Amino acid sequence: MRWRLLLFVSWACTGGEAPSDQPVRTDSAGVALVLNTQDDRFLDWSFERVLDLGGTDSGPTAFFRVFPTSIGVDSLGNIYVLDAGNFTVAVFDHAGHHLNSFGREGEGPGEFGFPSDMAVRPDGQTAIYDFARRALLFFDPNGSWAGTLPLPGPLQRKVALLDHGRIAADVTQAAEVPDSTDYLLLVLGSDTADLGRVRQVSSPRPQQFSCTSHAKPRYFSPRVVWAAAGSRVAFSDDTSYSIHLFGESGWSAIWRRELPVVKSTLQLAAWEVNHGDSLRVRGCAIPAEEAARKFGYADLAPTIENLAVTPDGGIWLRRRTDEPGKLPIDILDHTGAYRGTLAGDWPFPAVFRGPDEFVTVETDDYDVPHVVVYRVHRGL
Image (cartoon, rainbow, N blue to C red; front, side):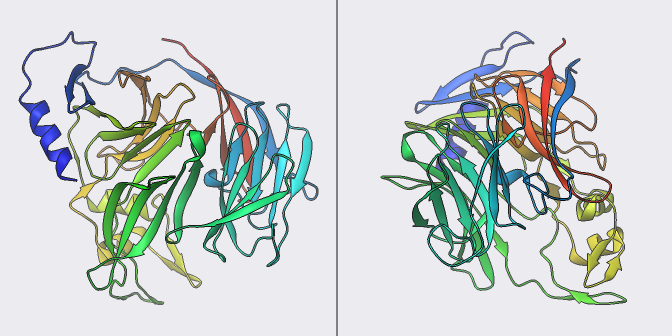
């Protein structure tokens, strides 16, 4: 990624000032560089809960194992829910009425061995990653099996179906260094693009606790955080407040905010364990601070914790601070300009359903997953 260093040097050497409420915009080798220098500006927005699917004992909304990476929407606002625990995809219309279900457990065409993640195109074509096959299974808008595509490594967090038939996915591959694994963000198509790559120790030493021993990478290890919509892929693979954008014609922009990096502390790492709760391993409850201390943590915590791309190409970004559990959401418009911050414990979009609604996954007091739609009411 040598080109990034050159871009940052070019940016740092650019003179001139912009109005305080506008970002500094420059260009380097056809890549737009946007630097937001404003302090936090808090938005007076509110979220209205308009639809809640789940929590039933039977039927299509009796969800068992649903994650933010296993839901999607099409251009009509229909909601697709992959329930990995029930080996099915349920489709609901804009109002939440059940339309269709497809998929089942098995080893035949269109059957799932270990489904984990899903992506949906605007026309309703669906791709489900089956960990048992290490491949994407495609289904047409009617839920009929339409083919299989092996991936160049096990999928890690999510998959996205981009415009013009391209696919974004993050996978792992064995690194050239012993006991290490490379995490890659790829755009697959006629020419595969390697967007981001980080390396982690894959065989950490087991740590001994009072009731068990367990091995785990240190907290705040390098990772690729990414999201995609339409033809735009946004990602971050370092600790800074820096978002790299890849579009239909290749690299297009780098968006940043001038905020200090987050220095790791034991308290921050303990929150990372399980939101400060105990780490449970084989029936053993390990206190969060003990887990953080023994597994260790990097010197810096990645500033960007999560990303979501809006339908018009803007960004919602949940970022870390030096206060455990304080994770505000920044809003950047489609040009990369910072528009404001949502402070507090707001829900974060898994996928947008138009400009004013998004879908996410929440769990109730019994840890049962619910698929929830929120409507955004924008104030100042």
